[in-house]
Amino acid sequence: MPVGYRLVRIVRNETGSALVVSLFLLLIMTLLGITAMQTSTLEERMSANLGDMDQAFQRAERGLRSAEDLINAETDFVGKYHGSITDDDAMRIEAGIVGFAADCSNGRCYATAGVAQTVKLTALTTNGNYYSVNVGGSEIARYLVEFSCQDTLAGNCAYVFTITSRGLGDDGNTQVTLEEVYRTE
Image (tube, rainbow, N blue to C red; front, side, top):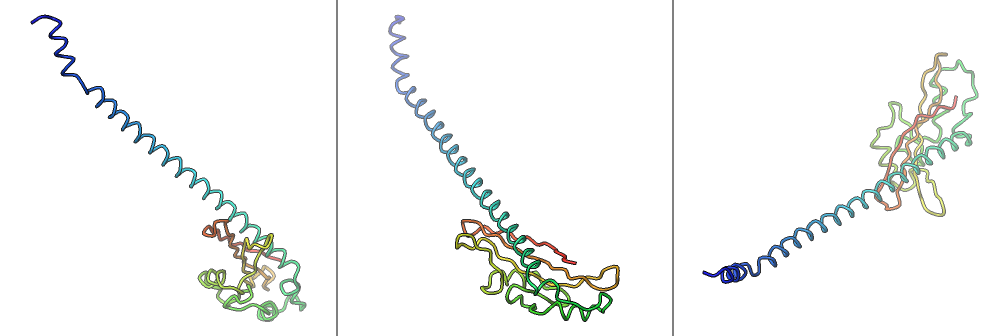
């Protein structure tokens, strides 16, 4: 068999294999591109969610500061009891709990054994049972103020307020809840 004939025969048997290999490589490259796009989209969503959560956290912090300002400014919270510092706790509590309720109505909570967390979280979702922080006509945070009277070294109780604040993110689904203990005396 002459050499030229053998070469022609090999070339004829090889026809189309380059096309198959090229198509296979194109398929692999396409799958890699699709995977990269999906990963990029997921990372973009994660970044947006993180930004929204950070904003909700900042808004919950603003709710805490608003509650502190309210406690310091309103006579309902500070300077209620004008009796002797040695008076018993019952007298101080009776003067302190005016306007506070176990169901946290009007954003003010009080129960002798402490208000259950579920009651507070429910009140944060019920209209009229929380204070609201608004910016530009939009609600950005909600908060409750819980009253308690804690013993001091002098043997009488000091007014202590537990503030529960919930910040709301821009997407409406993101919420961050913070709680702080605030003492005025």
